[in-house]
Length: 247
Image 1 (cartoon, rainbow, N blue to C red):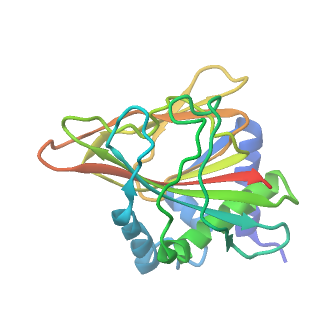
Image 2 (cartoon, rainbow, N blue to C red):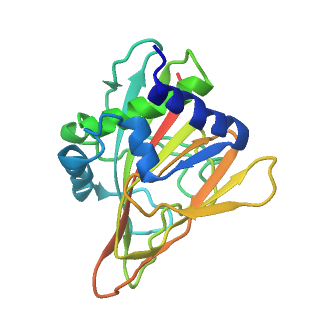
């Protein structure tokens, strides 16, 4: 039987990635595609997953000396034809200097994603949804998936930099970026530059679950700094990044 939701996940975003290099999904579209039963990316399951961003730990590998980034990290192995979302042993994150001129070239150990967050139905929906899209573009692959939880803090005396390395590629095959939430911040505009296409596109992930999926071989991306709207209160921008590399 034809499943229109699965077809939409595999065909429409995949076609957009093939044609344009990326696709930006407003929260409602991402929720409809990745969670058609409306059980994982809304309500208590989503709220609990989003609360896990309150327990991130400082990034100790900021070559610019910044104190504005908190994070956790995990790795999953997704085997072709196997629906299991198998978490791998904790390991460092590595990017070559050609992909991250600021913090690359070294193995970076981050605090592990908590067991509760790793087992969240919300994360499972996003992993499976992204996998369906990327399998549609590049079928039959095993995937090495890295999960990054980021909180960028905005202070009156220090701009928060979501991408302090500037416009960049991640050194993988495909990437999903989903906004978890924004609190008391201005800025944070996403810029997209696609190899072989003129100009640069820009937009702001503003609602929880606004999502971008992109082909990392072709697309450069970056995010402008954030600052607090009200300097008397703390501000932050929370995102989930899932990177997919053929294993």
